[in-house]
Image (spheres, rainbow, N blue to C red):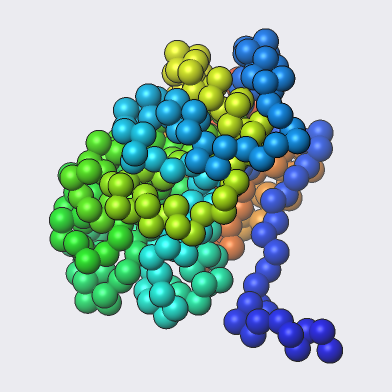
Length: 354
């Protein structure tokens, strides 16, 4: 049988379901509600016309990285571009992890850390938030050192909790876990301005991941960045595909990043909508929204989240439910525009008979 040729350790793997729905109010993937093509159409089309579709892209994405270095306030030598931050997670693991070495991830946290670790046959360790979703920093440090963890992944702010770990605590981890690569995934940092990107040349074990899919609003292009000292960046580049970011993505992302005021304006609108949505959710009986520092809100529903997911789907709303025991009574909703947020609130009221 052909299945005899499959990897034994991947036979229980499931295909990642991206839940693509047409004609639905899509509030499941933490996407930006603003389509930047509506604001930058002329500049974007001009940039696309400058591309040669018959030629390979710049393998170093130099102009794109230059634009992001100005956006993030980091040196060009400290940046490598990726096909979304997903690819960069995989590159970090490929660059630094030997088979059976340990990766520690928080529970809950972004699922791709676990998936890529298992693919490369790393040993996965979980460290859980407590029942109130607080993190014991000292215990985390002790675990990293005791278990001789090679790579520690932390999303900050956390996805799906929306909570932040203070910069002083991140630095405490970096200082106390000097024999471990500490990866801080700052996918949502633009919504809270809690970042350690200014410390990448201070801590030799620090890697910061960034994405253009959330606050910047170009998820369709799949553009992300890793920021670290030059030694770590060079190691990541060793395992990178030669032409990993396509020419169209490079050209369009460069245009968008050079319109920082527009990005900041949209971020401000999203934060305002987040607070509006949170206040509306607080008034609905039988649910409890969790304060967020991102563009999504985690909601405790005190009932089966799959049932609520299906009821919302019947109303043409797609949200995120979870299989983890720690999140079985929670759903996560992306902050949409005002019309989407109001429709979602009304749907929840109807479901919970408010």
